[in-house]
Length: 135
Image 1 (cartoon, helix red, strand yellow):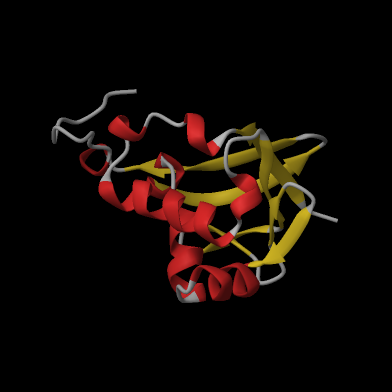
Image 2 (image 1 turned 90 degrees about the vertical axis):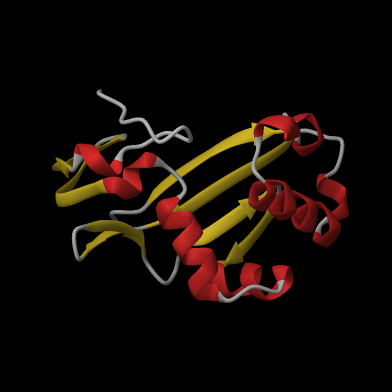
């Protein structure tokens, strides 16, 4: 039906906090304070929904679910629990990787694969030192 699910098992207390920026550390702290069972244990964190292409950017549909262990929450429900706006949470989900820099022209689901076609402006792919990555 065009839905995809992606996730991983993580232990939030094992993340290298010294390698994360302030915003990332604050988000993890808020997540653990909101969902205390996530602390000091392995937990599945995932996203399930239909990817869309809006204005050349990959985005998730309004029925997207965020999974934390056995808990499945809509973006609106998770945003409410974390006391952030749904728009802010959607923006973070859509731009949390370099894929946010990809100007998507086509999205195709083939079996267990997602094929993205598009282009990237090399000037937008900068690392934290301000240098351009050439991949």
